[in-house]
Image (cartoon, rainbow, N blue to C red; front, side, top):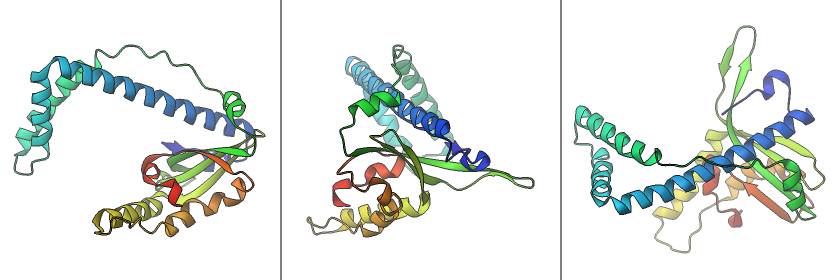
Length: 219
């Protein structure tokens, strides 16, 4: 996703902040619903068609084989798409009900905040330069009072690198109790929003991209 915040200085516009949060919440909810339905349908289809299940498994294994020629990989990929298209074609229409911000506010207990994180690319619209910038993260914070704040968290590559580094340390460690060093992630992830969540012991997170791998309880 890209952002027009920097073009029109929308970060302080109340209507824009409501629209942004509403769009993010409903997009994520719709995508999760489609993915859930698709997975159920896929499992059901493959269970009733064992030959197709076996064929797909063989295709997946071959696609990750570096010894296969490019022409063979293209043929396998084409066959994979045909099978997957048959599965998706059986997906029923999604009857999705839009979630508005007031509904979220009614669900939030007192002394709590809801934070929607977004990975995006800013778009710069200048006289000489019209181009996308590097990926960044932003936090869209909704308080119980209904106030919405948009906080820039910085470059996504820097945050993602620290998250993956900590996860890699855990995976490669022979010490089963080693939980990784999350101090750097905490400083990048929490420090920019610290003052916005102060005094709220209950925090609801809706994470995006690599942020989903953060063990929040360790921060």
